[in-house]
Image (cartoon, rainbow, N blue to C red; front, top):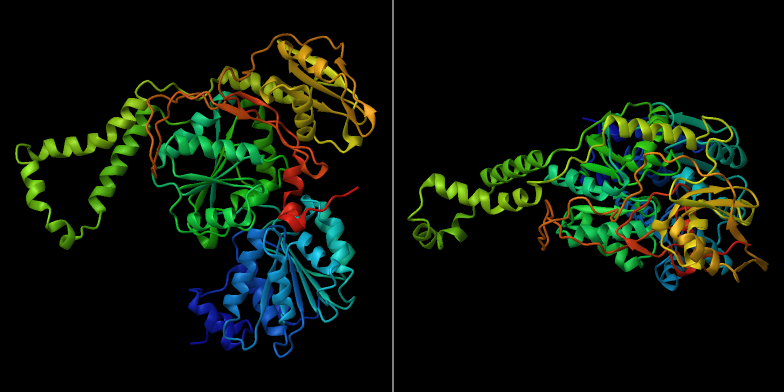
Length: 638
């Protein structure tokens, strides 16, 4: 019987390698793209969701078109992050293991550049690279791209989101004009359309499904809670799913680290993945996650690109992405290779509008779910334990030597008593923690107030709808804005660092062109303005003062109180567990805000008592984190 990959035109040595990896049939994107790309005569645009097999869709044809007798670079694959770079390089090495003289080099920041240069000098046909490190190597005149016939731009939308447009231009200018360019992306924003127009000539376009839509095998749910209850809601979702193996997404590196640290303290088997980790640390975290010795990976959008791990059951959005299209990439971490999965959003009532926007983009409706009660969690955990006990594999040889002593210990107990005690050993911990657990779901009235607030913030009530500070807050004018290359995340960090206040004290940020408005708790406003008396930015004095807008009338809105991670941390149970944690009353300082690392300013925002706040506006570190993949990838732009 002819192998399905052979029918597509793939040679036997590559087909055999693919079979050894366990792939029997091509995915739809592979089935459609491979015959077109094997012709090698056209530029190509492929649109397909994450986890559908795009790497093989371009990797297998490349191996058929490359001359492996030559040791010169013939194919260049550009991707946004280290993890994705390594993943693609490893996949292509596996596909080509039966090809004599095949050489694939991964070029990325955070690793030894001298080792990468040695590998290139020894001869290479396929170079897989992140843009920053690739430019460094080109700048050293250490690589010759004059023989490159194929350039692949993988995750093109994310490379543009991360600010790699100029880098891509510079890299492609070193390649021959007659090369063929293959672009692969999960979404098709206007920026990707422009890159196709600039770099390609009459490309063949292939779209699997509808553009920008989500994977049909993913169920989408959202929970509406008060902002201060987000962490408690996260814990309850995890506890209600004892076998969860998931990725939790946060907006910033600091948020990622904070959530991971709290989960670890509360007994969950979790760790963080973000751009501030060294390559060795990132590799160690990913190794644990791939081996499933870790239950929860807490990650930023940038760091999570390239995570290709099978059987991820849940993706949890602790904070919604600022770029709505990024939701498609996040949810694509689950339901890979035809599996099913669940994508969960934990939101406050003001974010319902964003859920509706995401629904329109992915073409699927979200299910509004209620957080389980404490009783529900206890019941789920108890029967999860009973199920594991029932199905556990018994090692008769090893346990046999202890059975007489075990029977002696239980001699005075009946079967029912043994079962009760054994179940209670685990169950009592959850029962103690959850017996008085509050209802974290917000009421219909609170939800309606939040929706009204969301409409006001989006300007649906007219020009004056968003002016004036909320009760208890002062609205301050500051003479910097978007023309100074600030995002709202950058401005938050700038205000907190120089004003010496915590991020918890900052409310809404209204970024304008040459000026901005910042809402700050009235109690902190005087301190902030006093600390800004001698602050300068780009050689000019920064002026900050009360704006004079009339305060809005007091409205519901939950400002978070004493703990963004507050909620239900009672009891206190340590240790590493795969299925839950039991808290402890910790009001440890949480950090908020995002930084401007490419301008040399350290991200921060001060410490607050457990307050996690979601600020709109993507931080610079999240937009360009991939550019700073390592020491050699840090490129400053004037």
